[in-house]
Image 1 (spheres, rainbow, N blue to C red):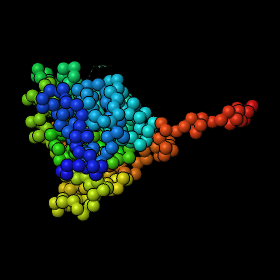
Image 2: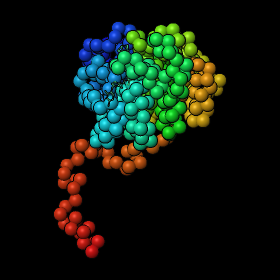
Image 3: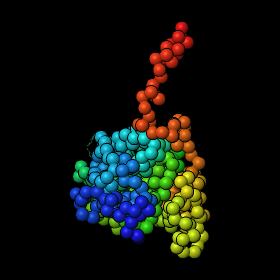
Image 4: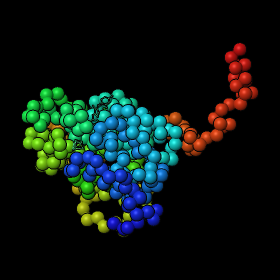
Length: 340
Ligand SMILES: Cc1ncc(C[n+]2csc(CCOP(=O)(O)OP(=O)(O)O)c2C)c(N)n1
Ligand code: SF4
Ligand SMILES: [Mg+2]
């Protein structure tokens, strides 16, 4: 990796404060990938709004992009506050980090409506199957039969956020593992290029409360049951595509609206990343086998985002002057008179 990115910035410009999470927590590995992805894509740190809720995962924005805007919202409210930020200033890159508790338990309604609204944002769920911050209770994504640290099995079926997102019409859905840098970094880079809500569900082992024998989110379990759908490479718009050294093989290039390319190589059994029903079927099938299917699960590049749906002006709403947004006294009077 070159020492400076396309903006001439070193990677230090993308780092944050020192982590206070437990040593070995998956969330810290995800932080590293977020830093790398933003650096590689040449994102301007001061044009990022990093958002989160409450939880160990939601603490992580403090550990990356210290020069960006940040908002640590109330528990489960990251999606609505992020939607507001994206609407107020469409020039910002909105990067939301949440936990499985923050999203699938208290924040599930927010998640659902955020996905439906499709405001441009990267929505990363750091999924460890437990409420890490409050000492390891099962979350709503915990797999049925997965055992707690004390050996008690979870008896309630899980909410799978990826199939839920696809079913709700989300146009970019990925799944990854905090311990899979070659997959997670390009996945985040691709999500940053997506023009709507991009959901990435990342399995992120909690070393303190959910990394034991019998857990389906431990490092050992995930390493043994991670089925990678494809090899993923991201080629930014500013890098000539023929300069990329990618091994020969069956690969498909998908162009993103910003001119970047996602190269999918070795896709499992002719998996069609644009086929919504096939994606849901593949996820269900892998869950039934106790596997974690990872990679780019679903992509719809033609889906309209909230700016297009609402016919929002190009100028960020936050910078519109009062005389532009407020009708004059005469116009208001005219409107009132028309109702007489
Ligand atoms: C309104 C409200 N209810 C409950 C809590 C207690 N609480 C704090 S974090 C958390 C769950 C965090 O789990 P998750 O989002 O999975 O994050 P993790 O710590 O596992 O990364 C809960 C229930 C709270 N802070 N606020
Ligand atoms: S309690 Fe779990 S989720 Fe929280 S910092 Fe420690 S290892 Fe990470
Ligand atoms: Mg959690």
